Figure (cartoon, rainbow, N blue to C red):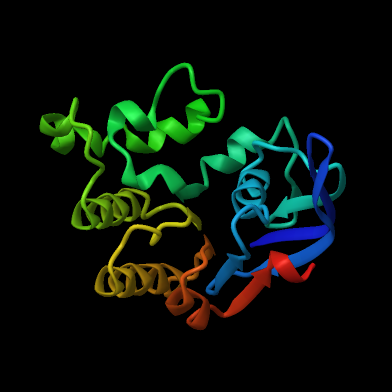
Length: 199
């Protein structure tokens, strides 16, 4: 379970959320939605402990998420990043400040099958994106929390439905599942919707 209580999230001089409170419960699919630039990815990064809240708190199973505890809590999380559609050299540029080491580790076991794609300029196909997402979930079967940042942004309707089925299956096993998405089919199937445009 992830709880956000009276949280204020600030990037630079911009306040993205103020007084935000919600609980993402075990066995449920929570969708974080909102227009482009509303702060969905920033909220995801906050929930993973990469960005601290200015006020309020985030807790995992009743324990505070802090700078010190963040790494340990991240070991409990399966993560589908927004960059799922990109190739390895685009996913993990060592100079990219937004690409944290913990975010990179999810790709380690998955990338050998894509070795023949390295050096190409075309992004992954929708089928390849879905395969990476599916493999990530399979390899993180022991993680009690699943966090996905726009996982269906480049998927077809059919593949989005298949991904949604996988995420639903994760929730059915008692996991906490959070998805940042603007896809109507995902929003319509969520147990809880956090609309950042309505804060």
